[in-house]
Length: 149
Ligand SMILES: [Zn+2]
Ligand SMILES: [Zn+2]
Image 1 (cartoon, helix red, strand yellow):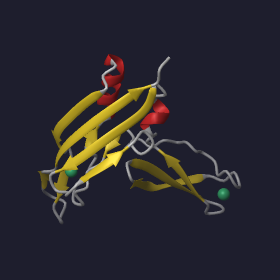
Image 2 (cartoon, helix red, strand yellow; image 1 turned 30 degrees about the vertical axis):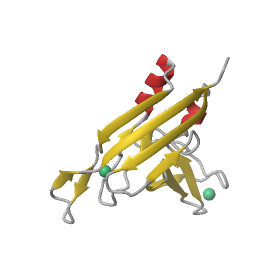
Image 3 (cartoon, protein in one colour; image 1 turned 90 degrees about the vertical axis):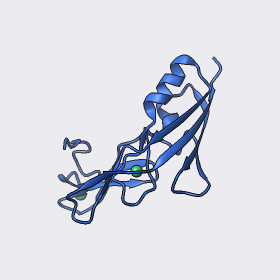
Image 4 (cartoon, protein in one colour; image 1 turned 135 degrees about the horizontal axis):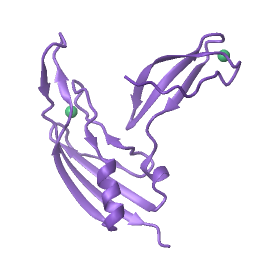
């Protein structure tokens, strides 16, 4: 796996940072580093909110229903990044790569779009030896409002 070298120095003491791993909070992945000298943890976010990347988006509403979940999840331009993650705890994720669809909508100035798609993740068995495709199925309704210029 390719590891991003940034940040290279501890912001507190200038010491060397060591990569500790990746984790996910909501729809955003983060990398965690730790200073070899003062042990300060330094976090770097990998995913940016869609709204930050595409200022042309005035507002965004993404409603997600999943086969496994009752009810739906709603996201906005601050709470969604490039990926919509799957809620199946056994799934390796990432669920759905949303960004290309949003880019396409921006290009076409399209305001509504519905995606019906199976999860792209796999389920790992406890031994990790065999894998099955995650059976999660998503219905994603995207509503976009563009900034007037
Ligand atoms: Zn330090
Ligand atoms: Zn999944």
